[in-house]
Amino acid sequence: MNSTLVFVEDDAELGALIAQFLGQHGLEVQLCPRGDEAVATILRLQPALVLLDIMLPGKDGLTVCRELRPQYAGPIIMLTSLDSDMNQILALEIGANDFVLKTSPPTILLARIRSQLRQSTSTVAPPLQAIKPASSLSVGPLTLDLTQREAWLQQQALHLSTTDFDLLHLLVSRAGQVLSRDELLHAMRGLSYDGIDRSIDIAISRLRKKLGDDPHEPRLIKTVRNKGYLLMATGW
Image 1 (cartoon, rainbow, N blue to C red):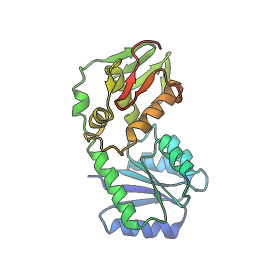
Image 2: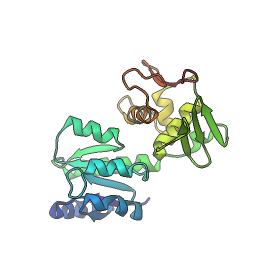
Image 3: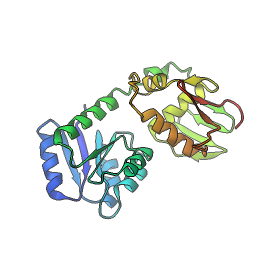
Image 4: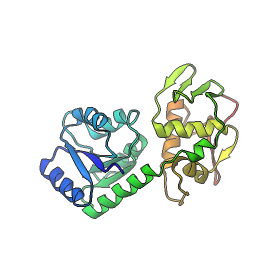
């Protein structure tokens, strides 16, 4: 398993301490001190995971996460001293996988990192391979090019992360059918839904935003209470 992490943190002393602790547990940490250098550094190194502070010089961590997510498929953990529900919600909405406070014990941070790395390496393709192969799929004005992994709505390109594209692929391939969180999570990550994991809900929220679907009264991706999600086959 790739064990290299990029830690974007402007506090050199804190960065060195965390890097040393993680290094003692088999993780190699590359430090990046500035937000305006982070995206280029991460795309160059292609680490297994990104640890990202919110308050950074040059560009804040939330902006870095937003710019990075369409180009980087690995886990992103936000690490911050700001104990704010709004910051946590915003971070998750724009593509972060987890949110850890700097006041948390280092062992908690290590456990969260290992959890994200396990989930990342267990994202296997077999469930998606069960879908009948095709070069493209369409529903209404939405088209997916499965070879190039690109999507268009009303002939406008959609900027989707790897996770978002895979989820949309599943929904489009089963348009008009309700898919449970368990089915979606198993297809995406090979995991069973534990009743707590919100990653599918967050990804659905991102897709709705990119499709221009009203989050309060969605008409394209509907929530079917106690059952799951339904991508409408008609009415686009």
